[in-house]
Amino acid sequence: MSFLIDPPWLYASGVAYGRLMPERTPAARAVQTATAGVFLATSISLYLDRPWTRPIWRACRAESGRDWMLNSGVFHFDHSRASARTHVVSALLFATYPLWLMLGERTARARSPSRRTDGTFEPTHNGARRPAHVGEPAAAP
Image 1 (cartoon, helix red, strand yellow):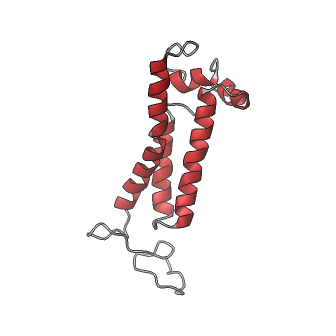
Image 2 (image 1 turned 135 degrees about the vertical axis):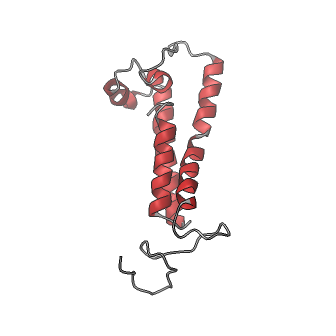
């Protein structure tokens, strides 16, 4: 995970959620929250050079977790002497993680065949293009 890779990865995850879970259900929110939590916990731990992240940044051929988060093997920022400004910008980038996930989800839902013209969603059952009713069997593809 890195600042260069995480936003597109979170966006793609959000698109997948929006396609696979077209309804805003507690289960969908729990999966989205867990995903954002895993990304944030791992990325912040990398940035703080927590020992458990060593296999991740070593596999990426970085000098440290912070090196991986800031440089991603592409840039050459001085990760060993990060300034207060670097820490503030990093914190702001971390704050955008849930937003990337939600943006991907909204994009997928906007393109969903079950989307109504009034901006609301019509619940479907197993991907059927007609409304599902409680207790109704799944529609044939």
